[in-house]
Length: 393
Image (tube, rainbow, N blue to C red):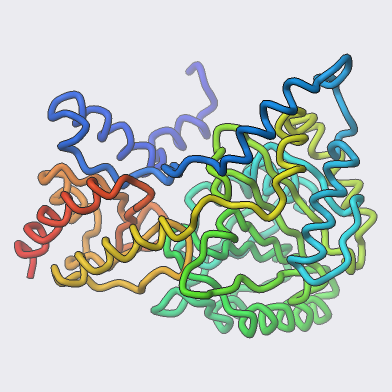
């Protein structure tokens, strides 16, 4: 045996997203890229804002001696201040630069957060369907992910969360706007969740954290607003990235912010600074830190994603698919017309349509469509979607 048994097992049960992506590459070689309708990967297909390229060029041109060296583990102070100033407006709570730590993307933010708060055996509760990597993130740091069901429209089921909380619970991890459902949790539900965690924490005599994963915060439609997590619950941690906002996922730049009202704020910040270093990230990329400092609040043209959503939803509704129209993200999570979502996804593959089974997101009986693709892919796939649905109706 050359690798750890645990890792070997994980590879055998590897991500459905990755499997479908690889299948897409195989089919494109056979049939040509234009004839394969690949909705498997949430890779933004819109260009970054024009200002991004200009700021990037200006930053490179202005770099001098030492500008590519190490900086404080938490990030450049000026960058943290820029992020904090924006968060103060967004979160409606005064955030200081010391409350912000620059990270290697949102995944880096979540991993340093869980490393800082979890003891071996601690449980992390998350509503399902959920992002597939959460289970591994919790396991990375000795934790156990515990999924709970959402309501039929994928909104928070507070009764299910309440029933899942035990003396082993350390955090609730939420993702809003949600991957894979596109649901946005309401301010009322988040405040109710905060009250629930406060009440349960007092009974258990331990701090229960609310960790909010928000890389899709700016990708919302129809006037929907994403509520402030910091006004919903004091013991909260926010992790995010610029990957989806401004279409730079490959640059791996994000941050984690601690609610300035957190009871153990100082300890949390010290823990995050340490875990950001010892997990091997050391620093978020120096160049990208300086770039995003100038782009706070910016995003790609969100109306483009809304238009794509509407083309897809209208076409699938006409074909007889059932779904909750996503309030945000660039994902749709329709019901499979048969119980076996994997079998239905295989049927779609026969029409060269690649989607991801809902089982991969702890959402069996559904499948995920990433509609961050060109319009032609969406429009030309609708015939195949309709043909497969007709087989099972």
